[in-house]
Length: 448
Image 1 (cartoon, one colour):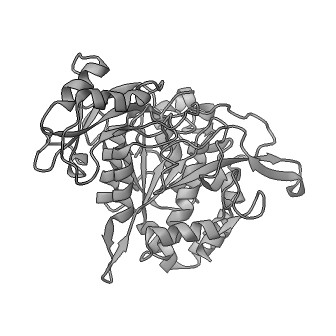
Image 2 (cartoon, rainbow, N blue to C red; image 1 turned 90 degrees about the vertical axis):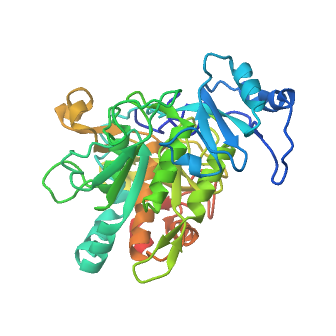
Image 3 (tube, rainbow, N blue to C red; image 1 turned 180 degrees about the vertical axis):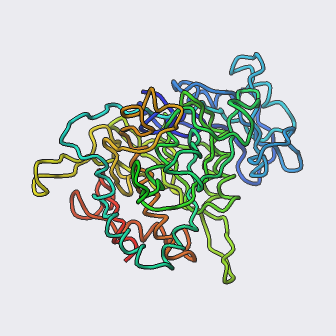
């Protein structure tokens, strides 16, 4: 099911609103220190393998030579490595590549793939599956007791912002109200805004709100569900009502999240490819190297990016394959009539492979959906619904990473990553394995 997996392809949001491909070049660019122009024939030959993929494109991404400025004025990504998105302007893809490769100010040309969210491959309806089994599986109740007994930890948790780069978030949902801010980066191939103004990050798809609820839905409020903890949510809308968007918009969204202080970034989306292109790679590297001032002085380094592994039961898809992101696979649970007759296993839909770093609950997850979609998508007309996918697993892992950050705000992204790996429950073969990575996340171990 080809939907948003955040990338410059049809980026699928993994689970909620692909097929494996042989890695191919994502674009053409000069090596560092090389300024000689390439011929259009060389450029076309170089990108031909990419153009054989089934991934549709929204246009092209240009990298300008040093000293040249982009034409756009409302783009943040242009500040990183001089990238600019352009439409095909009525040309065929080959014609557009040839045209822009001849421009003296252009140093590199890349495909701006369409992206999409990946709806669940199945929606489990087995009555033995417990509602909201995920928080219990990762030991949230014990963590909640710890938080409620420690005002200092509670305050620290409430100060952490998790960015959800997705289809937007319903800021008025009663389980999220008061803790959601955001921005929209959603444009057509000509760069024109879609679905309202840049300040309208409302969710017309339901995917982003579902992800946000897993992370931060209020608990002890006599309604709905309980998220992992009461974090703040930075909703970065890069996907439309159908779960579609462009890779370029996602890159803008990631940079916006970093520049606005988010040290944990959730990407419940992916490409229909196994490798990211240069613009995506450089944006993730930008996030990994960013510095954040600390209240007591000094800085912390890096935003931690967690990405869905994919829902094809195949190899991990980009951007989860990038070294600067953590690939998250999905687990499901069979719930018998007693605690002794329950077990957790890799979801059949979950991608797997050596790139998987951690696993988290992703099968039949109950969470929030927008108020406006409750009548058509909600359970009994309420703003809650079940979804399955690595899109649902990733926010559980992101929330556990945010708990670690709350306790260790001065840690680098690499230190947070190491702690996340070390604090898991080893479900598969001893040690790291292709199904669960280092293991399924455990919130209690993460803050001990």
